[in-house]
Length: 446
Image (tube, rainbow, N blue to C red; front, side, top):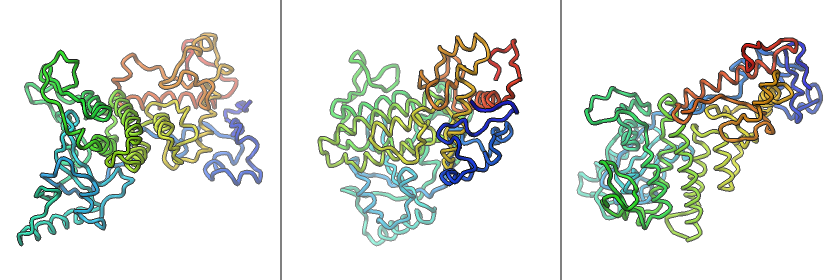
């Protein structure tokens, strides 16, 4: 049992790290952990210092970079990324693959139709060099072909790319990759409802699971997959002829999604993207057994890698992707399977022993032995977290957030604010002096 008699929590509350401080065994611990526990105990001030907390609001880990953008028009509907790389040259200064890939082939998510292509470069001048080269060859009559089509190259921008990737985002003005909501002045527009629609996500899954049997229906002016009682518009053939396109579309969607705008993204949208990712990974895994030349293990690995780097997914969601793909990323926290937070993630460079230290404090404050009232002890059995109903047996204990009934309609920013408040209160409870009493007016006071 940790010693709280002086309002501090001893680091020995972590079983895996117990008894290591002050011995030669501390060589396996991080410098941050050693600094926090050099006096053998952790104070309230230390625990709540933002420089020590290993958590962060998801979506805030990475700010979008102002890459240079090239636009390619009139591309063949069945063009491949390898053909585009070969056309532009493999030595061009593309952005790193870790950023989600340089090439974005725009696909209409409902029909599966290929529209145009954007390519991101490390600098604007690198993109402009491609345009200059294309213009110089065109002037002398050497018009360049991509497949069997004469293509057009032009310098573009992040604003145009984002608008092409998220055409259903009404009332959005893009400033770089940052969305700014403008007033709705259109009489028949419902205004901003999100960056992607539920119908788009449903159709992406359909294109992946049954590319040969997708019918597009119409109902009340909306395009969506129907039941047979609706008016058939057409049977799409694009997913059948370019089966890789839907996966490339998801890659671009995840990589370019404006995750930093947490006040505009609901939990419902985030979880919808996660479920779509899971469904497409499952479908692609099945398709790999059929040895299609366009659906390769390289595409599968690229999709998994991108999904594991999505700043808007929780650690728990990423662990589910890793388990499902058989690719346990070294960057994932060993505690990811038990991650209790909906809108808080692990700081990329946070030391794992510090994460365990905070997890142990949350567990100490939320286990039944430390519940101060009969009401708390009785209700703790019914408490559930967002993803796991047996958190009392996990490293984080029974960390609990009293979510409202419309939780899925909350934005990531609202959910994070609520979780930060509960996290602060729970840590204060863990580090409270033993003789301090909880107010009977608020039996759940932390």
